[in-house]
Amino acid sequence: MSIFWFITTLLLLHSCTPGVGMDHDIVNGEKSIPHSRPYMVYIYDKQRRAACGGFLVREDFVLTAAHCKTNHLKVYLGVDDTNHLPEGIEVDAFPHESFVNKKPGDDIMLLKLKTPATLNKTVKIIALPETNREKIPSNCMAMGWGWKEHNEFTPSSVLREVNLTLLDSENCAIPHTICTQEKAGPTQGDSGGPLICGNVPQGIVSYYIPNESTRFLTMYTKISHYLPWIHKIMNAPL
Image 1 (cartoon, rainbow, N blue to C red):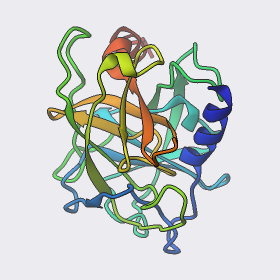
Image 2 (spheres, rainbow, N blue to C red):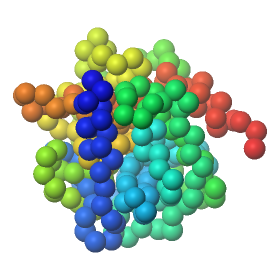
Image 3 (cartoon, rainbow, N blue to C red):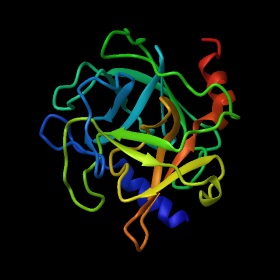
Image 4 (cartoon, rainbow, N blue to C red):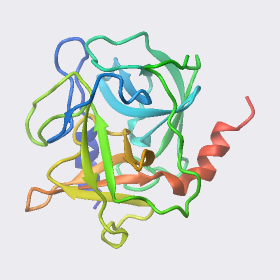
């Protein structure tokens, strides 16, 4: 599993410079209606040219994957087309303390915005799950700025989304994760984006494993398991 983690983490972290027509897409997805997902956040490190997705969960916090952490991250709110980015906001990163790079598990991170978001029709918060006991609907949706094909450089600058169906929990081997196994789904550049089930973000795109049938087993950090940790970080004194 560690070899797959190493390979697929690198794939999901792959990115290109915005502004030159080299951004990414969701595999077998379709273009989102512009600004119809106002909680979506584009995360970018210009020095490393590393991009991820994330989502706004409070005016001053974005939730994303821990393996997206780099030294010069900025977040961009209200983005549809990454060729036309607004001014980036600097952040302080809080990856989960149990996360180990290039290994599965605990792949979750909060980014505290140094300048809180101004909420409007293109920038909105999405509510987290309320408890770890609520049943997760099986019909879900992933979105991001990743590639259109898993193994081909087929970029797009616009946000795209795809409908997915969750696997039964016993078929998802890593603790505190949920997963899908389809030809469609997140790929390079989509890490950290949400898996939305019943209008609630239930997962965070972590990594995927290809198999012989070309159906990709995609793992998502189960957000509800980490609610105590999320609230502890978000409510910590300044």
